[in-house]
Length: 230
Figure (cartoon, rainbow, N blue to C red):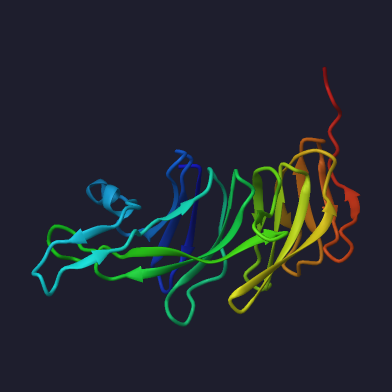
């Protein structure tokens, strides 16, 4: 696995999301934390292939792939808020191919263990892909990190191309606006500076931690510059 995240799914239950880096079959999987420690269930929960569930001719059904295939390695992964009214969970993912996608994890109640008990599996599907100029990935190089606040209807994405994008989600669609070049070299991490979303922080190959304004896309402060050493 390359990335792992946990979120509350209501009450005391928790769900885990994980992304792989075993190219060419990289995936994002989601499952209940209650069954995550049972190694007997691991292969089935992480399976990304469709299969036919055994049963009578009338009762047989195609079991859909539970995991979502990703182009390139999973380099960024974040849950976006808590459970929705239909019980599903939303999450954002970024890849080494520069793509950013909004995914939905929905409970799949037909997955059971050897005793027929529900495994609390989730089917992960794409809600929207964030692209520029038609079908071009959002970043020209790998996505490094995503900044997410549950209270905001947009997220920030930074990449090794040094750019920061603001991705807004309204209904089923997404739109991306560039916030300028965050740095002249690769950016490796991005976080909101506070819960208001009025500023964000980046760390990159240039050294130091910088504060930026989402409104202007401009640098407002260098918080911890590091001197280059030889």
